[in-house]
Image 1 (cartoon, rainbow over the protein chains, first blue to last red):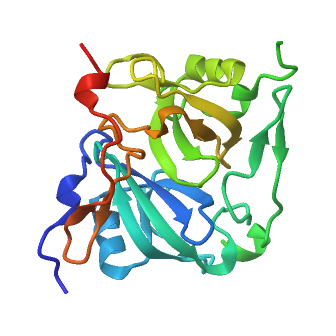
Image 2: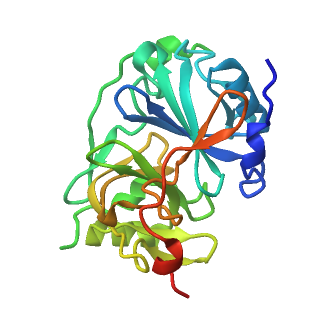
Length: 133
Length: 133
């Protein structure tokens, strides 16, 4: 069903050369799972399907999250920030892991006193098994 | 006290033309307060002082968060993401409001069915009173 208003009109894609930043937050726990980017098409598809689509800068293509791993992200709610260049996605993470390393969250390195990082979570899946070439 | 390691060596400032994305998340509630950027100096100052410093793209200058409003952000913990271009700051928000509109969070517009946004929070302070020119 077509919406009455086009929600991407409130977003500023120009500032980021056609992209806005997108944050995926676990709707149940509040954990931040990952940060990526959306172009207009990825935003539209996310709104239309209720499944998160990003724009992959490294692969330079539309990225249906979970297309390879099966770990899709189901949208529970969406917010935009005050200046319209960030989208907050409250999601349910299918398969429990968002990170390409197999970990639940991409933010698995915690800064410790002394300047080193501690790895605070372990992979839930083996990326070599999941991302077959 | 100088750290043993330089924690910014794990960050990729080059990808973002000298900047990494920084997310401020309320340490107590998990609410995402704002998203901004850090250059190397802002990152160093944040680590050294325990108070969040950003790089303001619009003003093109170092930005000690709260320098005008008094609403500083005290670092509780810091994380970096898998590819080192995002910093997650778990913070205590002094004054209760992070957004320049006076609201607690910059993410105060929620996407509704039909494509419009609902404003889901009200300002805690009057920006005209706080940001005097």
